[in-house]
Every structure is written in structure tokens, then in C-alpha cells.
Image (cartoon, rainbow, N blue to C red):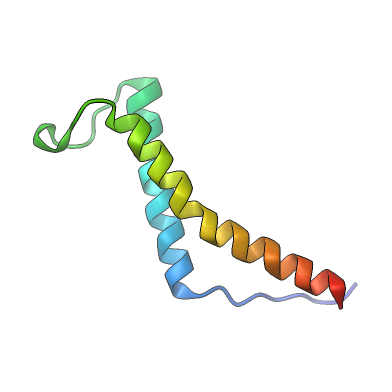
Length: 75
């Protein structure tokens, strides 16, 4: 089995970290009713918005890894 290494750009790592944090805050708000965000930054159904934004920010990393895996399987 050949050794496979992938270099992931720092920008994708940062997007993924921010996305995971937003997704976590959204899930905590929506499903557990935990409010970590200060009250003056809260708006109606911000939990769902955070979940959606977090998922969107995680997608580039996921697509990058999947494309690298597909490219390595072709060779």
C-alpha cells in the first residue's frame, strides 16, 4: 500500500476551525438551549443560522480532501 500524504492549506484549516466552532455554538443553542453568545449579539433563531454557516465553512475542506483522494486513486 503506497504512502499517501496531503498538504492542506492553512486557509482551509482556519475555515474548518471557524466552521466547527459555529456549528458547535448553533447545535448548543438549537438543541440544548445553551446561550454562550452575549445577549446583545443574539437574534431570532441564530442557532439555525450558525448551524448553516458552520456547515458551509466546513465544506471547502471536505471537498479538498475528497478531490485529493480521487486524484490519488486515478494514478
